[in-house]
Image 1: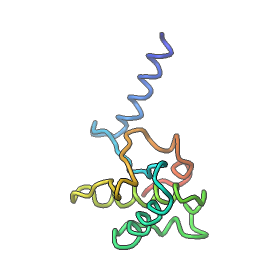
Image 2 (image 1 turned 45 degrees about the vertical axis):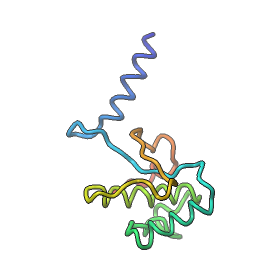
Image 3 (image 1 turned 180 degrees about the vertical axis):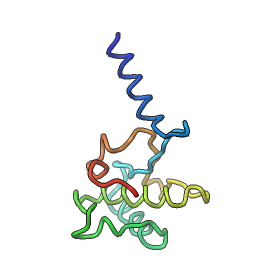
Image 4 (image 1 turned 90 degrees about the horizontal axis):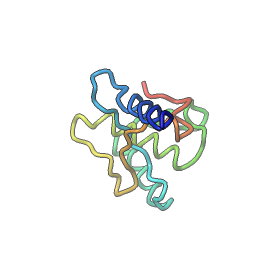
Amino acid sequence: MSRILFGLLFTMLIILQNSNGQMEEWCIADEQTPHDALQMALDWACGRGGADCSKIQRRKSCYNPNTLLDHASYAFNSYYQKFKKQGATCYFRSAAMITNLDPKYKLKWFISCEFE
């Protein structure tokens, strides 16, 4: 029982790590999205969407792991963090989703590639 309570407490601390008490949110690619739809959403985010995708280019700090899912998640989150205060969503034609759990525990690139 104490392990369960400790786990719940730890999870809540991760979720509420934002200093002002608001829950942090990340926009990540939905791994169930077909590759062609994910690629189209990634192309839009890095193009007309205005996401900062410079770090996921070849030989840049966030290029690896070089997977469509990781690059799309990086681009989607870049777009969302940059424009959410202006009303942007994390939709990308159903290719993305919001998570309140820090993706660095699931997605490899969050471990070595943090947003500035």
